[in-house]
Image (tube, rainbow over all chains, first blue to last red; front, side, top):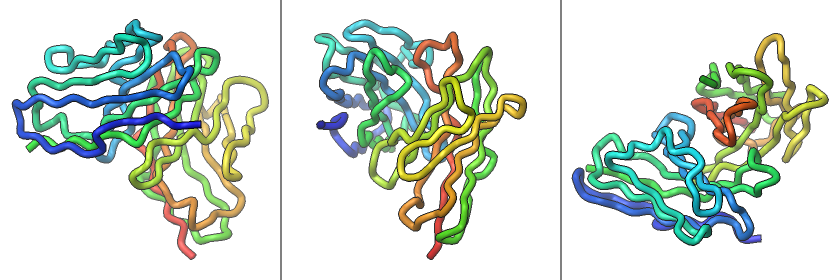
Length: 114
Length: 114
């Protein structure tokens, strides 16, 4: 079974630039999550989708972050404009509807904002 | 609000010795508890979970964890450590009424020396 795919793996941008990350979940996983993991910390949930609808985006900084999952499969997370404190690893995870607590994570995208 | 504490940034253990990685939590209602492991340049991998039932749960790679409600703890254990167990371990909690939102601890680095 193929895992969660993410791209790019690494990205370096200057502050105030924009960036987008892509995630393709495991086939059949209706629930998709985006996490932010700052160095030395545990992952923090940014947004959760169920199919193409948003379930929880309470921790998403909506003034600069946006995410979509238009067809209920793959998803894009965007930051515009980026700040230095956005430097982190952005993790995508997915899960089956019947086991939402068992999440499968992708390798992440490491973002460096200079 | 739910929270997780991993009091040790790093745990050092000799190969063949038993290991314990500590985790305490705070949550409203009955907790759902999880352990994930993160190897370098790889995404988080699910190790085990406690939902209900037996307080001692067994997971992947010979790991187990003990749920202690009175101490609000969920320590990860393994009877005999391997060098290949060296990685970053995260404890996570989900409150009963928290939907699918996982809150992660800050992580504990396990170093197993030959």
